Length: 98
Image (cartoon, rainbow, N blue to C red; front, top):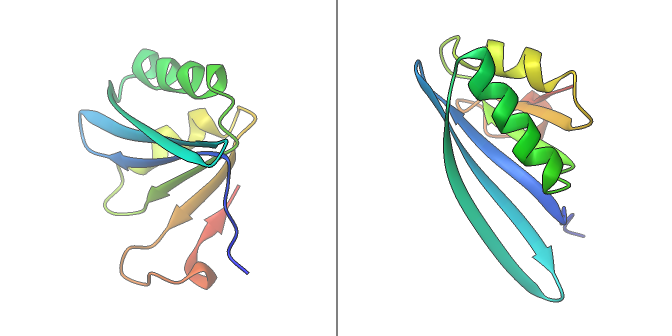
């Protein structure tokens, strides 16, 4: 059985920006919106507010380099289920959840 989250987001964190793809499934339709935020504290707080305003429940991000760490720490204070995926592994058994 496949698990489908109704409101989830994938993040790609870089040194100066984090790109977010919010995916919403409703009434048999799926929409996606992509936005870019700065990786400053203010920028990541804007990201968190945007996710909360869209009732996002799950956030996944790739763990390459160290750029994910500040984003994780700020989002971990929110109401999101966080998943940190190891791109080299690709399997859920390698993922860290918050």
